[in-house]
Amino acid sequence: MPRDDLAHDLIPAPRAVEHGERGAVVLDADTALWAAPGTGTSARWIRATLGAALGLHFPPAAARDAPDSVRLLVDDSLGSEAYRLTVAAGRGIEIRGGDAAGVFRGAQTLRQLLGPDAFRRAPVRPGATLSVPAQCVEDAPRFRWRGLLLDVARHFTPKDGVLRHLDLMAAHKLNVLHLHLTDDQGWRLEIKRYPRLTEVGSWRARSRFGHRASPLWEEKPHGGYYTQDDIREIVAYAAERHIAVVPEIDVPGHSQAAIAAYPELGNTDVVDTGALTVWDDWGISPHVLAPTDRTLRFYEGVFEEVLGLFPADAAEFSEFVHVGGDECPKEQWRRSPTAQARRAELGLADEDALQAWFIGHFGRWLAARGRRLIGWDEILEGGLADGAAVSSWRGYAGGIAAARAGHDVVMCPHQHVYLDHRQAPGPDEPVPISRVRTLEDVYRFEPVPPELDREQARRVLGTQANVWTEVMEDAGRVDYQVFPRLAAFAEVAWSALPASGERDFAGFERRMAAHYRRLDALGVAYRPPDGPRPWQRRPGVPGRPAEGPPPPG
Ligand code: ACM
Image (tube, rainbow, N blue to C red; front, side, top):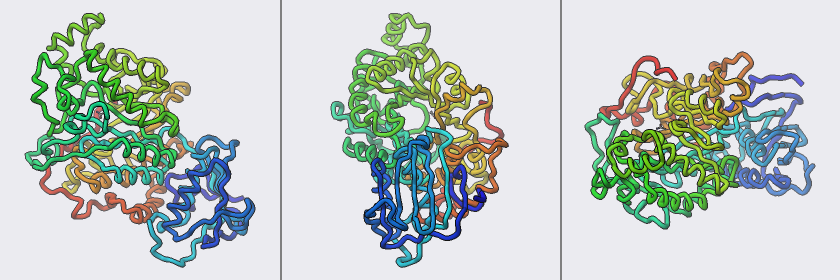
């Protein structure tokens, strides 16, 4: 069959598309669905999501070979998440996946083949002919971990918004939602045994509007949190889409909201932690957890509830629990007699070793419960327990060191995939921060650094785009920062790197013409290629743009 890899507009690009026989399959009210055992998530999704968009019911097929039906089946000769989608006139549409997740990824491709209206929630052209040209798509992911971090601590995203992000991730074949649930500016997860974490810790009195140097304040309380039932629903909704939700409870830094709720968690011998409130400013708070047994026991209690809410078998990678570990200022530990006594008792040289001890405790605690710790690359300082994994954010260096030491790595260097960074130069970008990171820059990001040999490179589980929300005060601002760059990121994470090592950005841009129409149908407030719409600007709100090439790393 002739191969024609360029004639489609799929994003992320599949491994191969073959256009063989002539003709097409037409979907209409009679199109039936045959779902083999193990394909239930895809059958439910096709009926609920494609059904609503297209006004079709997809009744169950009487037989596997019913003509012009949609057939779903698992074929374990294909790899995990791999699929083959075959459209053959007179025979229908078949999605064969290496596992249930593979069938689901194939169903996402079918949605793109059906055109942009398949991304709506109700039919806008009832009765229009829906036809899919005969073809065969063969596909498999490059990386197993294809993540998105959503910071729901700095600005809260209510449950509905999280479910929407899960739908958007599914449409881009992403499979790990890293939820940054706690920080200095807010605690977003109900913990039954510690109600003050949300009573006190889930809201702040006001917020700075703009980056740290902005003189503007939004003088209204900001808050919100997920109840435990909200989390169960988020995890289940994600699992239906073969997406893992990895919770992050940040310790021992980024903890001012927790200390405001329970002052005994802080360094009470050097600060009056009883006077602390949830932080209303951006940056890194000096108020960090005290390295005491009381703090360890408290957080074991938190993590016990976390393990119950985020079961290890929900999806691939659900065994991971993120413990943060980044940006922990050590000044209070240096001044605290209690912290110093603990350091001396443990025979540790310095405060960095004390942090390693703190993280190591939870690494062992999680491992004893069949779970795996993941943390920001600072957790490498002072040594890391076997089985722990690293989110490499300060550049590639942490990931390289971790991979060489035999740890799994998720590559998310801020120079490449921090989507809070501005995406164009010029004064029109809303609250511009850091360096310009364009759609093309993200598209050209390579998660595996050349310093790693083949064996070490296998430690790179994948990659993740991180969305920190200090300057994103609502869902529209998040959409603007995330899209269209998440489409480029999805291709980095899913699609094979061409043999040349260079991705074809011109080809991607051509395919984006179709993808913008899909995003429009989904109601995504992306950044248009020629700049923000008037209401997407934030005139007069200071950011902190940086100029010049990024620092190495
Ligand atoms: C981070 O950006 N502090 C992980």
